[in-house]
Length: 238
Image 1 (cartoon, rainbow, N blue to C red):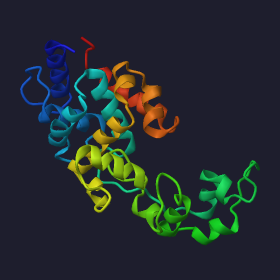
Image 2 (cartoon, one colour; image 1 turned 45 degrees about the vertical axis):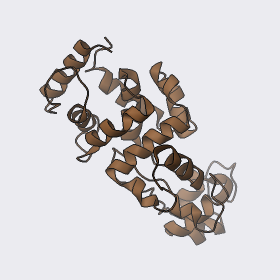
Image 3 (tube, one colour; image 1 turned 180 degrees about the vertical axis):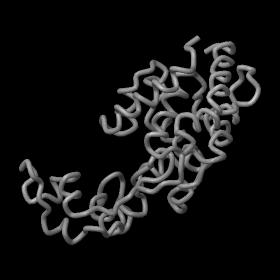
Image 4 (spheres, helix red, strand yellow; image 1 turned 90 degrees about the vertical axis):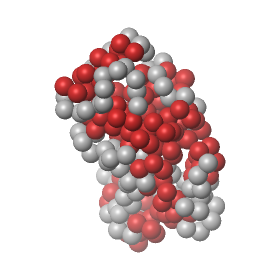
């Protein structure tokens, strides 16, 4: 990306009511803050731009395509807000989301909840400890709920908290709620990016590949594509 393209991008943000600082073509905290406010419809909290300016260099996220993919996926997951996974499910919804675990007949068109689903309904901690038990590196009682999805990347599971925390030098294992701060959430997203080796796919602008690395599948792909397009529409490629 060129400085001239970045300057046009800053002018577009300014015209849309999101002040990016001086239109000098240099990307910094103010431009990042303006971008996340634009993408999130002003739902991103203060301080995200500052956190991005601090943490993105760690992962070498400095190209237009990489920044667009990073912002789109974080915006889809949480709008950069301190957000914990909502595990307060009805029995019916549990049967629909996790039919192999909580439906009487996982193959039936109408997924009816089994007795386990009924016993866990609207009990977030109990559900987290059951549905995530012995998965994602969770090995101790209580890990499922303790390491539920949090923060900008919706980091999930003991293994992810451990690996990502080591990459960014923060103790997410003993202080998992650190992921649910503005700075810690951006740090976690950057560490996750490095851990999952997302950079090459992002550099190519391959949104589908990035989403698969981020999510493990295609959940949220259409919204992420829309958020990518929203940014690309005001940020010239060169």
